[in-house]
Every structure is written in C-alpha cells, then in structure tokens.
Image 1 (tube, rainbow, N blue to C red):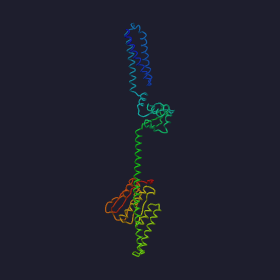
Image 2: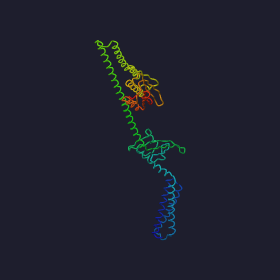
Image 3: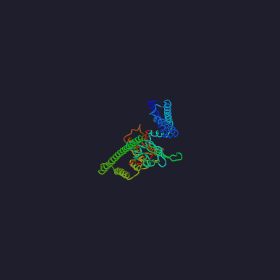
Image 4: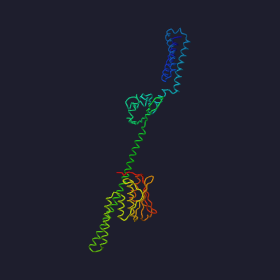
Length: 399
C-alpha cells in the first residue's frame, strides 16, 4: 500500500469516526442508551483502526492494501449506517426533544412546573415574556406566578396584551402546575372600541333625553304663559264689568260677583297646585278649575321614576288637546302592569276626531321622549281618541 492509498484510508476512517460520534450525541439527546452504546463501540473501533493505520503510515509499503481497505470501508459504512438509522428513527418518533421543539413553535407561552416551582417544560415564548415582566428567565414558576397573580392580564410596553392562567394537574402521582399565556391583543383592542362606542351611545341617549325634557319644559312654559294670558284677560274683563257697573252704564251686581268669584277660584286653584307634590293631583285640580274631570284606575309607575314623568307628560298633553280641540269634560287614564313593563291608556269624552291625528309639537315631543326611554306611543282616532304608552321596566329619574 503506498502512502497516498494509506492517507485516503485514514480520511475514510476519520469520516466514520465523526459519523459515529454524531450518532452518540444524537442518542444522548434522545435518551437512547442502547443506541449510544452501539455508536460508541463503532466509534471506538473506527478510532482503533485509524490509530493503527496512522502509526504504520511511514512504512505503509509493507501493509497489505486489500485487508486494510476492506476494513476501513466496512467500518466507515457501518458508522454511516448507524448514524443515518438513528437520525431517521428520531425523525419518525416522538421524543423529549421533539416535544420541546413543538412547544417552542407554539404561539402561546407555556410552562409546566413541579409543586416546588421548578420548571419541567417551558417554551421560548414563556422565557421571553418572563424577561419582559420580571427582567430574567423563568427559573421558578411559583415566583413568576406571584408576580402576575394580582393582575393576570398584562399589557406590555410594545402594546401587546397577554392573559395568563394557572391550572393544577396530577401526573404520575405528582402535582404539576400548567401556566399558559395567551396573546389577546386583538380582543383587548375590540373591547376598548366597544367601551368607547358604549360611552358614545350613553352620551347620545343622555342628550336625547335632555332634548325631550327641554321640549317638555318649553311646552309647559308655553301652556303656563297661555294660562296666565287667560287669567289676565279674565281679570281685565271682570274689571271692565265692575267699572261699567259702578258707572251705572250696564251690568248688574250678580254678574260682577260671579265674574270675580270665577277669577278668585282660578287663582286659588293655581296657588294650591303650586303647593302640592303629587303631579297627578296637581293636574287633576288644574283640570277641575277649567271644568275637566280626570279619573285614574289601575297600578301606576312609582313616583320619581322616568315612567312616572312620561305618564304625567302624556296626561298634560291629552288634557291640553281635550280642552283645545275636543271640547270634552272628562279624561280617563287606565294603567296596568304587563310582562314587559307598563301599558297606560288615555281616553276622553270629547268629539271624535274626523281623521287620523296630526301630531303637533306636544305629541311629537312626547313621542321622542317615550322612544328615547325605550318605550312606544300609539294614537287611535276611531271610534274615539285614545293614546297608549307602552313603557319598559321602572327607570330612575335622570337628575
């Protein structure tokens, strides 16, 4: 065997030795004891043949080429076969290394730890989050959990939001804790947008209710002004009758006394209305002063609620329209409790409308307030006028 041939055989044996050592390392990573022993034996044999060949290299001409070549090639082939077989099986079987690699590729953070806090399996994402939250890798799961236990939903400086959860499990008779971190950045963003939308809706609802109250107040002031104008005209007419009677031009004492008696009753009724706290009583006395009787029957919403305000506002509007358009003397209010809330109906004995009701400013404002409160308003014109309010459950009066 010449020197070149011997060098090539040394190279082949060195390749086999390296392949066997690679197989040994792979077997150690996968906890394969038998495979490790086999690869180590093959590597030792490769190295022994290589050592002998290297020691005889200066006098390689005396070596028989065929046996040494066969030995080198067979040893190298055996090493490559063993390493390839071990690598191929490791690719097809589940091992602790493959489990760890799979966990590292999960989008969530994951850690399994014993009862004393020592991690038995954790992925790279959990270590990364531990660095961001505590400044160090996750070395003790109990310490890490105590850091985030009071606030398991954490928003990081990069804007991501993570939710952590710990679950206790039993494995082979031992207690194991699983800590899971889930990226809920998108859910948190949607939650914030939903809260903003709810605030905008609440503000819009508040403004609609305020608008309804403003409209009601403006309508009430308009009616008060009209009533004051009427009182002013009535008193002026009584003064004119009195002056004519005193001058002896026309009139008699009975007519003058009747006029002053009517104005006195009207003023006393107005003063009594201002002193009462019951809204329906005030309305009933005011109606009595102008010749209209209001009767109520059934259960009514509790005083101080928004439903009570709406019922009062509807009574005011029906009374005004009864006097102004229908010429009646009786307003009947019937209220009953329903599964959804309240049903309140308003009827009168005035002239029946000739056609569908055209809603003016008062009825329009009343409808807007009712719908803003979640209710509904219906108006029937045949066979007689009837207004119905359908209101939800009790709602406290808005300050």
